[in-house]
Length: 344
Ligand code: TXA
Ligand code: MG
Image (tube, rainbow, N blue to C red; front, side, top):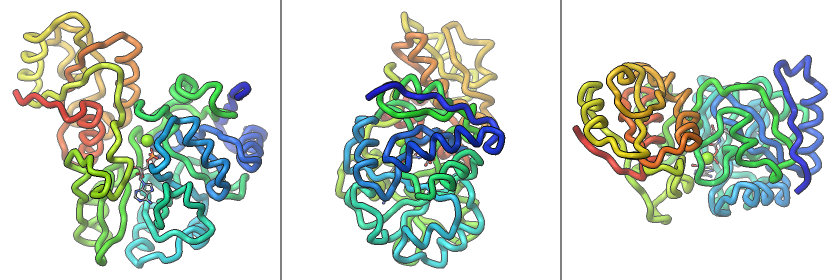
């Protein structure tokens, strides 16, 4: 592929020229990394099979891993989904635009390549004004997985996208840091219930506040590797992985710090909380306050990338609380650690 254009958009109105440039590339079947409030997405026209095939190639992504389709208005949902259960309508009213993805029966217009061969389609209306402006200007729904090379931590800045995808995509739209920092909550609807497939910024408690009891798919907590038992195929791949070997370490600050200090060897880094920093005798990257899961979500993927850049070989990560949004942070980190854990 030729050069990757960098298109800066601070304000969609003031930078309308770059919004149009991004939309023009997409309408012609090209690939553009775009900001959303969760992570950057690698976008293509969701209704153009050749364009969507390009996403799999650029990311090195297995082609049975389906994409999330992004829309700019709730009305676009009727184009993509054959059927919208009443719980989905309620959740859309409560959380869209925002970090919630709903898996629904797909309409014929959605190509199978977009859904990884499934007869369902995952749909999200992102809250980021730049994402909305690009979708609106392109006039088509955009398929967009996270804009990282497959297996790498999701990108939360344009620089992360550039590092992974330069020369592989037509453009990267730079709108600064993503506010949420982890990918959207994914739900499906089965047996009249809402079922959580991937935790995110919209928590179980928030979902239950709207639709009552919510099921949790076992892929969320367990290490589902049997393809047939996995409802959300993305969960079965090694994910969010830095080059270093990551091990999750439980315990309060003093127990964590004592464990890390007594296991220091060359190449050991701590992925810690702010309150751990003072006691540590090894190099570290902090991913926020131990009591603030939103801050941890915001910083986690950038911290994993920084550890790689600094040459970490073994990373002891302080395990987060699983309360509220902590569930999403824990879910990403336990996968980065390939489920390796030490209890102190
Ligand atoms: O926040 C996000 O969701 C970001 C931004 C760019 O919107 N996108 C994202 O996409 O995280 P991706 O491709 O990295 O993750 C999509 C997840 C995967 O776990 C995938 O298996 C699941 O959604 N998914 C997509 N379509 C599905 C379907 N039809 N049925 C079940 N799971 C589906
Ligand atoms: Mg991803």
